[in-house]
Amino acid sequence: MTLRLERAYIDEMVAHAQDDAPNECCGIIAGDATGHATKLYRAINAEASPYRYSVEPKDLLRIHNDADAHDWTFLAIYHSHTHTEAYPSPTDVRLAAGWPDAYYVLVSLMDAAHPVIRAFRIIDGVVTEEAIEVT
Image (spheres, rainbow, N blue to C red):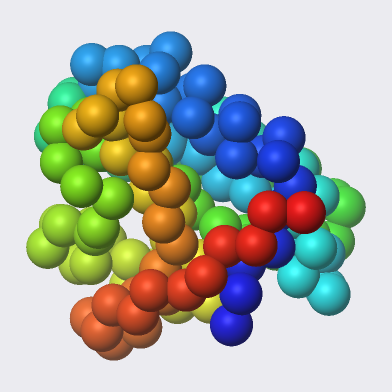
């Protein structure tokens, strides 16, 4: 499957990663029933760490309630890797169990001048890269 995102969503994820550096950023992109991205939510990284992320629970509730009110689902969960490649770490894979239908998007700032964005599905611990189509 291909994750289709408007350029504005790509730019916003990169900006969020750069704004939160040196810590990892995290956020959620909601989508409608057709898989069309509808809103990007920046989230608070409760870990405030360059090596880990977790969405702050009250922030997750805020995002979930707003998405639910619009009948949207969590299309993509994104976060940044500040010093490593855009590939899920073992911790990322373990934490992905809660949202098996979502894409996992990683923004790597390993080369700060040239951020890399990649999308994955993580199902039952199996990581599969998915294409991103910028619309």
